[in-house]
Length: 195
Image 1 (cartoon, helix red, strand yellow):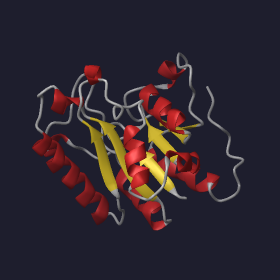
Image 2 (tube, one colour):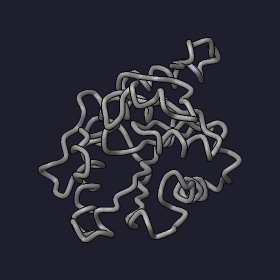
Image 3 (tube, one colour):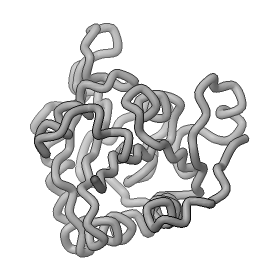
C-alpha cells in the first residue's frame, strides 16, 4: 500500500510564523519544489492525503469557507504540476476541545484510510511527513514511518529535546520524496536520520 500523509504548513507551503495562520489564498506560498514533489509521488502510484490542524477556524481567526478556498487553491496548483492530493483532512478544533482528530491524535489518518477501505493497521506501510514534533508523534502513534522536514516550524535543535525521533530527516518535501521512493524501492539501506 503506497500511502503518504503530509502536514500542510511548513511542508507544502511556507510556514506562516509562530502563532500565525494562513488565513487567505494570497498568503499561501508553495515551498519551492513542493508541488512537483507531490506530482512525483502521484505519478509513482502513491495515494496522498493532507493531514493538518487548523485551529484558527475554531478560534474564529478565519472561516471554514476561507480554509476551503485555500484548500481548493492548493489542490488546483498541485494538479497543474501533475500531482493529485486525494483529500485534505483538517482538524478545525481548538487545542482544548478534546477531539481525537487533532494531531497527535490519529482520527484524521483513520478517516483517510477508511476512504481507501483500509484500517489503521495498514498505516505501518505508510509515511507521514511533517515539520513538528506533533507531526512525528502523529505518524508514530499511527505506526507510520516518519520523515521530519527542516523547511518549517521546527529544527534539529528542537528535535534534540523530543522523546520520539523521526525515522528520517529531510531538508524539504523534495528530499523527503527521494527518501520515500528509495525506501520503497527495496534498497532500504538509506541512512536513518537520527540526531
